[in-house]
Image 1 (spheres, rainbow, N blue to C red):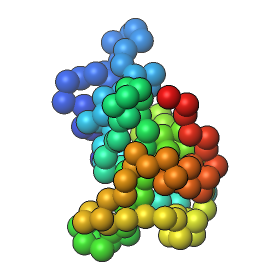
Image 2 (image 1 turned 45 degrees about the vertical axis):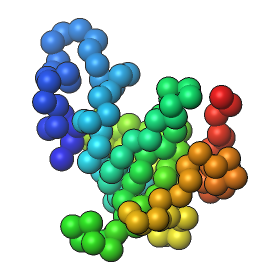
Image 3 (image 1 turned 135 degrees about the vertical axis):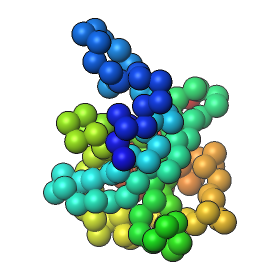
Length: 135
């Protein structure tokens, strides 16, 4: 399901002027979006968006990969800077190979990492080739 299909408030209806997308998007409409790579391989689905409450900026998207109906799925914190909104296909693009996601540092719903830990954050940004923001 794409963000247009989850648009309960009609934010993305084209009314002939610039509206909320794609420069500004509602978080609720992005949760559930698919993530593909440049080879059009399905990598996962956005499950949550994590906001740094000190800066007010999005820090990570929590993406799921694998599993069936959430059973056996692995979760990944993907730096927001690593994702690109694909407005044509109504999904996100993450420029990594599928094998890299399968081997990425992840977690399950019972063992969330301490996302405020700077050492953990540095390792995640390093893995995805992004630079942590200065706060």
